[in-house]
Image (cartoon, rainbow, N blue to C red; front, top):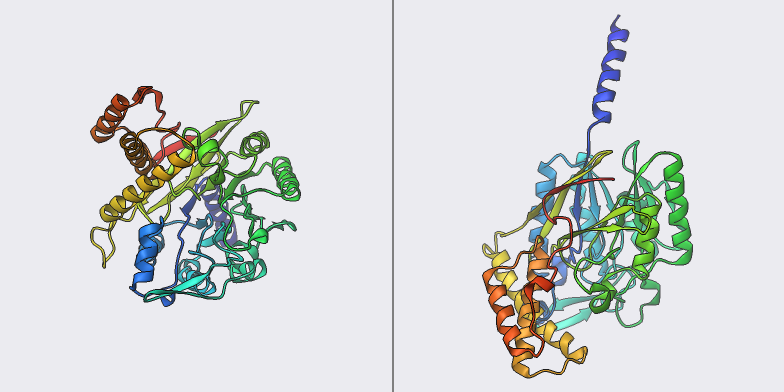
Amino acid sequence: MKYILLNILFFISTCLFANEPLRIGVITDTHYLSEKLMDDGSALNEYILTSGKNVKYTPAVLDQVLEDYLESEIQILLVCGDITKDGEKQSHLDFVEKLRSLQNKGVKVYVIPGNHDINMPNAVEFKKDRKLPVANISPDEFTSLYKECGYGTALRRDTGSLSYLAELNNDTWLLAIDAARYKEYTTGSITAGRILPETEKWIVDVLDEAKKQNKQVIGMMHWGLTEHIMYQSVIFKNYLVDEWKRLANLFADKGMKSVFTGHFHSNDITAFTSENGNIIYDIETGTLSAYPFSYRFVKVDKEGMSIETKNVVAVPAKPNLAEEDKQRMLELSTRLAVGKLKGLGYDMPNETLMQFADVLGQIFIMHAYGDEKADDKLKASIEKLSRSMDSPMDLNDIELDFYPADNNLYIKFK
């Protein structure tokens, strides 16, 4: 009788837990720099002012995020590339150690490299007013260091890249796609990403096998699979994987419903519909190295996924971290917009150029946070710019945010 009861209880629990959603955490673009490789000198502070990465506070931000995950019920953590600032071996070693508490709890961690993780020629440490070279890591060292983060338990490995396939549960596979071009590096990283022909064939074989076995496939890749802002494929094409439109059509038609991405440091979700009417969602998560310091909680079931987004607003050493970094990023993005406009060859008076850059800077900050809506400041800036241009700008002509929502939503798979 005892064994009959045990079998009945096991059957009931199996049925109940089979319907439980997968609980997943998602982070990307941590750009983690080991605290052993930096001090509070002029070299570090100058780097922060001129880059999009506030690496001084990233260790504290990461600690806070991992603590939140540790107190949650996530079963899986996805890390979508650009783990380190510039591929420093010590940064990788520290990052792996920071994951240990989650793994000891039973959380499975899966990583994929970005363009700042492997074979980096300019891996450095910051000491007072100097930048000094430090050791980087090779592709083999990456898979060895992250053996417990996907590579050691993969169902399949691609021979042409560091892509791999992992089983998340009986119904769901994770397809981790390596599109980084670290084999080509000479003096620095290559911002653009591409999927090699042999890797594409491997991906198609995996998706075909998933269909035969009735497996749901979740993708993970550092580069965007589809556009997240107007004209991204023209102005910011290096943040989309090469041949993105063809690949988005291919992946959607092969049955992939979603892919988690990063690289553009923004919180944005876009739905891409293939020519055959199949939909794939590109779920881009913002960076942990700059405003808005975003990370996600995702629940996946057979019907779709719910997504909740959280942001770090303060750390012990910086109570106003988010607000101060938002201003830093606004000033930086405005300066970069000036350079981009000049580079595109726009001929306009300097006053108009600065007004245009101001509008673009504000839009970028809104895009970084997600769920963009024009506020009074942006409306006033656009009206001012419109008055100074030969071709007036209409806010209604600007699609600030593509469908669907970006931060908190439920996606129902078709």
